Length: 266
Image (tube, rainbow, N blue to C red; front, top):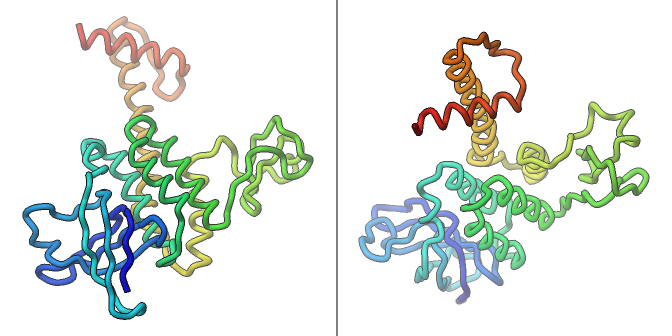
């Protein structure tokens, strides 16, 4: 049996001293698993996560662990290596594909979206990843509908999301259940809740990299808050004013950042 297609190398782990077990997300065949001969010791054309290339999967029987012949065209992960946030988003996406997608089932739309994600992470990491994960949930049968209220059909004042149906809820309909609903806008913290539900139904744990991605977002906001406070302390102490760390206006905080940054550059 022989399968040939284009693919993205989304998983690679040592099998023995020379070979590795690889997982390739391919067009037309979905996720394929097989052995890559010499992948561990290769010094030239070494297989790396994030590579896109031509893939050939061979096995004598359909039930056997096949063998890959891999020819990489380019490494889409290379531009992401200098940013921990971009790299974390890529690893989280690959781990979800490895964990949730069944083998040898085509997901061509998701394959194209994954290629798009690898190129879009350079601009808006959270926005690009959130769009990709929303598409992943749709492919798995958990489509989120934010177009209108699930209760009355209104298309405005949609500030909540139902955790049970994945559909938007307007302010009026949400009033009796506000403590049970997720608050919009959509975030990777909210989509993580739906991912947890998918993993629970499949009997698998949420990938560690996906959990860490949520922590990266949290600590990014925490760092920004601490940075704003530090800038305000530096600015107002310089001006001889008192400053309360626990109560400050956001606009004033960002003004303080602006003043402090220009002082540093000067």
